[in-house]
Every structure is written in structure tokens, then in C-alpha cells.
Image (cartoon, rainbow, N blue to C red; front, side, top):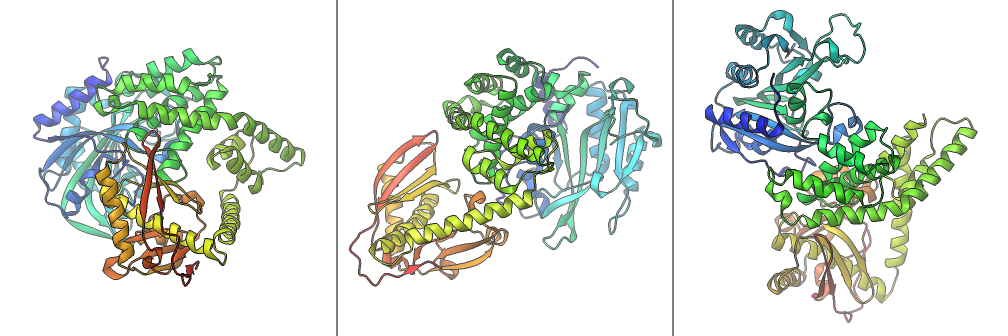
Length: 608
């Protein structure tokens, strides 16, 4: 096989499927339209309505290079092949061609276009399980194309049944193509009888997954047969580039080699290969996540981003990279990718500002936190214990900003155990204490308690109005209430126009005049999310939450997880005015508002 660059591989793939009458589709955002999943983790996600039949496809065949992000691989990053952010080459058929054609296309591309020898390919097929029969048909199609039965392996649902992306949706059995790198790539001489695809020795590498979309998984877990069978395939660009160039890992490909060189040039300690790889992966992922609108924080996507950045900073500390290095590296990554993804090069100061702010915030506490961690570990080992106490793990989070997973990872390096269940119990206990303190502070009898209830309920109306005017990507980033005003922070990429501010203000005032009821229910957090309740600070919530609804029936205006306090109906707020807007950072705005302070004393606080 001849040497090939990642960009040449991108072009070859798209050109090949363009000739096969596939519509070339641009990558969708890393933030999927489906709110039940955090990230776009597969190329097929933007096409789900086509697979299910909810939407009539605009075309019967498609191909794309999709930006993807998977949280399941964070702990594996640092080995040869795993990444958080990666690019997926994919081709699809929506009720058009099926198994035979998908196999024919795959082999033609690999052998004729890329020069892979047929004898280097090994195939895995679904062996059948429960109500789904063994996929004998696919084996026949592979053999018709010259793949011998000795190169075909059968596996269970765990290995050879793909999907759905979330809890429900399109899915089906799959057939994976594995590449035989030969014995020279084995980490150790493999002694496993029948060594082949899925062996952990490292010789066989999965390069292409052909998924036969035949089923739709329901919420009950039942698989129902789709009216039309479709094709969904995926190749990891990083992995295929590595295999074609006969390199030992993805980090030696042109996708990473120059990033790795830059990290090493900034590091005083260049002996930790894993640390360098983690920094390269995490920083590349962070650049793309921030550009697609994710900001570091305590909510779901934001928490993942913060974890990535802080993990990169921690490993940078291990290899002695000076403060400010993240910005140097991020600039290089932006420059590297802006020709492929032009949006990366537009207004990229926002990316750099977010990284700089997060580095500044965490670097201040990292040194002290690491010192505290060492003290905790020392005491644990002196006592002959094998695990960290949940209160100590929570203290590292609450005081020094260490994500749970970071402490867990460092503890593992010390051969110590950390219990997530115990940590979550500790976390919930602190939230209960904090909530009780808030209710004591805000829920007392008297005029101030009434004002807080009105101001707090007004923030719910304000958030809903913002999403109506500016779009559903807007979400709360913080809030505060004083006797004089409310403060509401949210994500947005520019200052609001006077017309937008007036429109938002008028929507809130209109809902106040409608005298909408304000009610709450208690339920598990997961159930609350399923009902459509907004939740932007997942890490702050206990397992049982209160869901406050403004409006009723078909006229629900706002639904949020919140601890209160609130008024009984919106009419008690009286009125609302936006008095100021401020830009407080990259893609962050702050609005300040006020409500009248001379309402009748019969206002009642809905504390729940």
C-alpha cells in the first residue's frame, strides 16, 4: 500500500461514493437535534428520521464525513486507537440498496481504490441471538466476493449488533471488516487458540462497520421490524489512515503527529507518551466542542468539556508544560483544521478565551488540590485502607474543582478505589443541606421572602422568553437575586439588539398579565428529564427533584427543575423590566431585571 494522507483519504472516499450516485452531505454539529443524547456519536444520527420513515428522504443514497464525539472512550484515550473526537466516513442507503451492494462497495473501495489485499481482510458476522436469526445471508455475500470461510468469524449481539444511538431508534445486525496487520504488530506473541478479529493482541484492527438497519427499538426494549431495510456504515478516519500507512498508532498519522510534536516541544518531561496523547486528543476535542457552542460548566455537555480541559491541564502538569501552553496548542489545531472545517477559523477568539479562562480557573487550584490529594492518599495508606472516603472525594470537587473522574483516575494510579455510589450520596447530602439553607435564606416570612419568590419566578419566565426569541440553544449559565434585582446569565454569541430586548421583556410581561398558575411535582431526576423539564445544572440536583410548571394543559409556558421559592401564580409578580445587559465572556451574556416592590402583602410563597 502506498502512503496516503488523511486529506487524500477524505477525497478518495467522497469521490468514490459520488460516482456511486450518493449525495454528499456536510457534517452536522456535534450537538445533535435529538435532545435525549448528549453528542453526535455516529454519522447516521442526522438521518434517523429517514431510517424510521418519519420523513421522506430527499435522496436514496448519501455519504459524508461526520464530526463525532464519544464519551465512552475517554478512559481509553492514550492507547493506539481510541479518541473522544474523531471523524467518521460513512455511506447510507435509505430503503435503496442493502447487504450485497454495501459489501460490494466496501470491498471495491478498500481493494481497488486503496490497494488493500483481499487476504488481509477478516470479517465478523452476527451469529444470531434470541428472536434475531443467524445472518447466514451476509456470509454468502462475502464468500461470493472471494472472502474464504476461514476469514469469517461469528459473534454475538454484543459485538455484531449496532444501535440504537440512544435508548430507542433504528438498529440492526452488523458485519465488521477487520484488517490483519500481521504478527509484527502483536504486543506479545499471541497464545490464544483461534486468534482472529476481536483478539486483544492487537494484530486485527476493525476498520469498517456495515450496519443492516432492519429494526426500530422501542422504549419497552422490543425490536419492531422496519417497513424498509437500510444501510448505515462507518469508518474511523484516524484508524484507517493509521492502517494504510502501516503505523503503530493513530498518533503517528498526519492527523496527530504535528500536534504531538508541538506538545513535546513545550514539555520539559518528554517521557510520558500517554500524557502527550491525552493532551492532543482532549484539546482537539475541546476546540471542536467549544466551536459548536458548548461551554465548560456543571451541566451534562458542559461537564464533559470541563472534564476534558481539566484532564488535559492535569496531564500537562505531569509533563511540565508551562501555563498558557493550551492556547499555543489550540491556535495550532485551529490553523490545522480551518481549511477542512472553515467554521473553526471564524471568530476563533471565542475558543481561545474559553480555554484561557478555564486554564486560569483550574490552574490556580490544581497545585493545592494535588497537594491535598497526596495528603489524603498518605493517610489512607497509613491506615492500611484501600479506598478514598466519599467526603474527601467531594472535598476535592467542591474546594479544588476536581471532577469525580479525575480523582478516580489519580486514585487508580495509587492502587486505591473510589466509589461513585458513595460519592453521589455525599453529593446529594450536600445538595439537601444547601437547599435547606437556601429555603431558610429566601423562604422566610416577610416582604423580602415575597420579593425573592417573585424575582425567582421571573427568571423562569425570562429563560422561556429568551428561548422563544433567540432559539432553544440558549441555556442558563448562572443567576443571582438581591433585594434590588435579578441577574440571569446565559450563552449567546453577541449582544442583544434593543428590539430583541423589548420583545423578550414584552413576552415576560404578557405571561405575568395572563396570571398563569405555578405548580410543582416531585419525581426522580431521570423522569423529570423525560417529561421535558429543563435542567442545566445536572451536578447540583439530588436524585429526587422538584419540577416547577408555569401554565397548565396545552398552555404550559415553562417547565424547569428547581428548588424554589416561587409565587403561586404569575400575576403576583406584578410587572417586569430588563434594566441592563452585559457581555461577561466569550459567548456569555448577562441580563439584569427588576419587578415592582409595592405589591399587596397577600402574596404567598410557593416553597413546596
